[in-house]
Image (cartoon, rainbow, N blue to C red; front, side, top):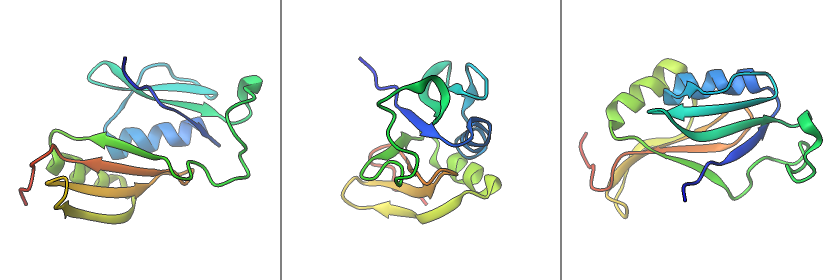
Length: 128
């Protein structure tokens, strides 16, 4: 079993562009109502427009999204991930920093819909 989180967003195209620019993900589906974002040919995140398809369990768009849920991504090449984040002009909440407990580097971001996105290097990655 593998996780394939789905997040509800206001504008799929805007979110797709953000995740492509900030995290280097690829489009696997396309469209204005639903998108599958891919890494190395594998779907790792789904985007779904709030109002599309009348799914009753997506949540409520007027409440802060993802309260208590973080979208956490492992970046094998953390330095390249940081360069992508900087080039994308993504909002940085914290970092890049060393997490001494996990013994890796990480950066905390906010996506266009307010979700917290963490990009972390591999465990034990304490390089500069």
